[in-house]
Image (cartoon, rainbow, N blue to C red):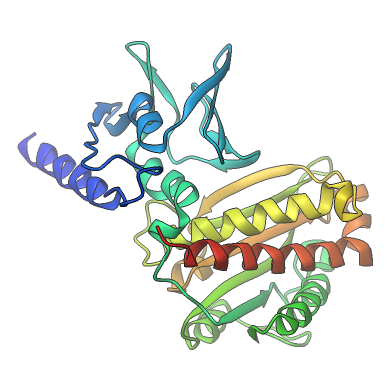
Length: 322
């Protein structure tokens, strides 16, 4: 019991260090003290503390769903669910939202590893300045991917994205430039050889014939990773811009792509690369209607533009003063 208590104390101490408030009074109060409680054997933070730290106000509550807002952010939290919506983007949590003693709690792990990088990107990712983008078109060669079409589609999308990035002044490295098999180990080696880089791995999905939508993966919150927080920030920018460019008539598109969220995974590629890294599944090839969209030039062009815009937003956010 003593060892367990010491372990929990050490974890919470690290959490508090990660949440050391910035000098900006609009973001946090100087000397803010986090107080956790143990629920279901996990460290949790009461919602009132989170509201105070990020200067959030409760704007609406309907049944089990609570909406919080500040000048820049809207957060939707549902008691009992293992996901949260921030500025209309869905994020999957490592632990469920819990209500205890009439107080809503979020896990300390999710607060540290997911919510704070989204809320304060310049604070958690300010050292990850980059010049190079590594594009990883999934599959290739003998590995055809989903519906035996994924390999050619990911390469086509990566090439479109590369052209736009180069035009914006980025250095771009591709893990493959033709229809060839590249092992996961080789993809990791190519990405790791680049200093000051980020990685975007491009895929299309497969599933039940009625399953559709776009989802983005980041390294599991339970996996120690030097760029975990930066990967959250990168995923937020790219994922949200992808949905915006695909669905908003303002950008000339109405593909009606469903948001399947930003999720954690223990993929070898994400674990093996020390840079900020994300893997995006940009639609389902096993869904007849969505597959037709994926094959269209308009869809791929919109995605390529959204990737570049997301990367630009990410770079701008981490260069701001915390």
